View 1 (spheres, helix red, strand yellow):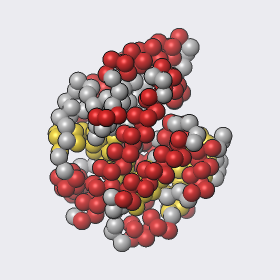
View 2 (cartoon, rainbow, N blue to C red; view 1 turned 120 degrees about the vertical axis):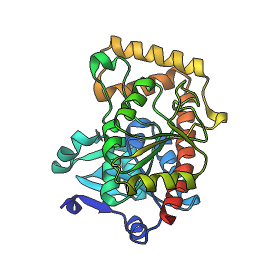
View 3 (spheres, helix red, strand yellow; view 1 turned 90 degrees about the vertical axis):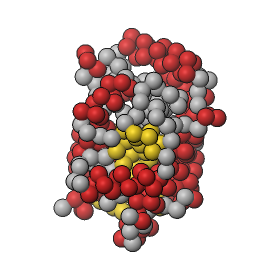
View 4 (cartoon, helix red, strand yellow; view 1 turned 120 degrees about the horizontal axis):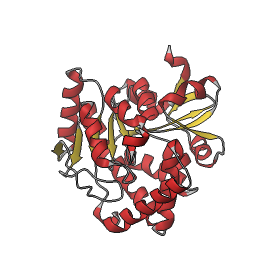
Length: 304
């Protein structure tokens, strides 16, 4: 039924049919997460890193209502430059598809499309989560419910530091989503390696990760897994600097009435301005690092 909406790149289709390692990549980071041309450069570099570590990259996006799994170079360029690219989460998918619109996929919608295509590993920057003051606003990202329901492992640099990380981890625990620290006991906070919160388990190798994932799905334990892979030390931002920048950005968002899906892009661009562009460089480096670990995991999973 859903195949009529899905368009899988021949190279990706071939790899999946042969049981080879494939890594899903999102497109929100291209269309809404970074400025041009860094967004396209980063997207291409991340695809290269996935290849260098033995897997096939499948960047996911929506063009003219088609769920694209594996974008061509021209399509990637369009996603980075296009002015008509909507930010698409689970709730938006039926309308963007039915109206034949263009969309960049968030963590939640990338997971859905990856699962439809049969891809088990997805690499992103940071997951969404429970927003600060969520006890009043109920602002909780659809990424979390997707992680509870969709069988895709997500390699990320933790949750975005603009969120309430403690509540995000509590929510994931309630829904039975394992939160793993890759070579760390502490859950990373996107721009920084530390958050002050522990992970459920520390795992030190892609082999160990792959075995845990296989066991989870063999046992029919529905849902994904969060693999927190800290930003490399050389590129992490100063903990206090980033927290002051976030506090200032949150205050401005509140004062100007920015809410819902506009919140994250606003906060990230504000933090970039407040940190003199250093946050953009950190963002690029952490995504590249996640691509390496995600590809290694996909290779090990394909062997099992």
